[in-house]
Every structure is written in structure tokens, then in C-alpha cells.
Amino acid sequence: MKQVLTVVGAGLLQNTLGQSVKSCGAATDHVKNVVVTLTPDPPVPGQDITVTIEGDNDGDVSTGSINLDLAVQAMGVINNKVQVGAPFNFSPTPFKKGDLKIVVGPTPLIKAPGTTTISGTVKAVNAANEQLFCVDLDLKSVSDINTLSLAKESATATGGVTSCTRDSDHIKNFVLDTSGGKIDVKGQLDEDITTFHVAVDATLKKLFISLPIKLDVPVTFTNPLPKGDFELSLGPMTGGLSPDPQVSLAGTVKMNDQNSEEVFCLNVDQVVEKEIIV
Image (cartoon, rainbow, N blue to C red; front, side, top):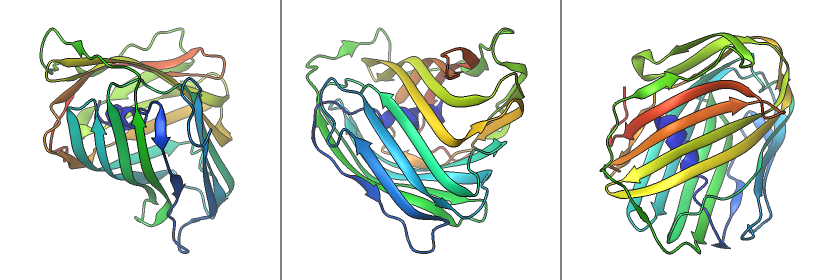
């Protein structure tokens, strides 16, 4: 899943030598007084990291886009410009008018061999393409892992994105729609969710190189997700990666609740193409 790969790329940091995470917002942004923190700062090998974004939001936001303009180098074989727009629709929205606080973590770092660098900007805009906030990244790390696993086959994928959601999960009447290049999930939550966990258990392949990825990333918003109707839509993605990354991701991505109980589950088996305009 292209959306997931974008998120996973931000986790490829280990044994950081030097880093910077800061606000690059403008006076006209809809989220005022933005403060972005990384804890610990700089990250410490063996310790979990937490990213926090705080500010004053001047209006509810349910529809918008996350726009990435990043340069990523990893594992000695990935060297890409990532210029991607990821439209989103969240209902009910956790991005309410007033005090806004988003906490991602604590979560361990992915151990990727070699040096990893991520630099550039992450910007959020609303439905009118007006900037909400901007985060500037300048991260560099070196791993204590010196070897790469060899994949049995090169990066290929045929399965796309399918549901592995169970009747016992906390979202009922679950519907997954992947038409038109988007990923849309909807249903009814049977509980309030104060913190959701993005749990990734997958394998990233680049040519004949394989990197296992296991993440459990807690995300907390100022406003919890209430019991009742729920819909989250991502895509269709715009922009692209250059050069062609020839990378695939296969495995599962789950949304769990604050008690680590499953809300819904997606099977992922996709290749990231150079052009992802749908």
C-alpha cells in the first residue's frame, strides 16, 4: 500500500547522529502557535521515540491532504525523491477547532542497515488547499545492523489491498473500497477510541533485498474517536517518486485500540511505482 510505505519511510531511523524536527509554518496557517517536538532529542539507540505536534486550530478539518516533499536514502540501495500528495477524509474528524495535540509514539525505531537520511517537508492542507501546518525534517542516522537479508524473489505484487477484518473486531459492518485508487474503510465503532495503534507486520523488498518491518505506532489526538459511524479514506495519491523505487510491501496493517484490541485489518501486497497519479 503506497500510503503505508510513505509512513513506514519515516520510521527508518537508527542510532541518530544529528537531527532536526521543527515547524516551518507561515503566519497564515490555520493551526497557530505550532510546536513540534521529538523525544528524546536527539534519539537515543535502544530507546523509543515520540513525535508531538501542538497548536491552536481555527476550524474543524475533516478533508484535506498530507503533502510530502522528501529526499530519502536508505539501505545503500534506496535514493529517492518523494513528492506525494495524500488526500484524506476522516469522519468523524479528530481535528476539531481549538487546542490540537497529536502524539505519535512512543515507538521503537526500525533497524535498517547502513545510513538513513530523510530531509524535506511534510505539509497538511485543508479542502481549500490552505495550509494547516508544516513540519521540516533533517534527519540522519547510522544503523548497528551490518547485513541485509536476501529475498527469494524480486519485488513483485499481485494482491493489492484486501480485508482481513474479523467479526470480533471493534468495527462492525466493515466495508473496504479500493476503487479509483483510494483506500476507503467504513463501519460502526462499538467503542470510543482514545488512542489507536497502527500495527505493521510486513516485508519490504527492493530488488533482491528484503527488510522485515514490525511496527506498533500509537497515535493520540486531543479529540477521541467516538462510538458510532466511522469512515477513513486515503487517496487517490498524486505525485510520484523518482527514480522508480522498484519496492514492494507485503504483509498486514492493523488498526488497534488503546487496549491493543483489533479494530480492523488490511492485507497489503503492492508495489510502489514511479508515477502514482491515479
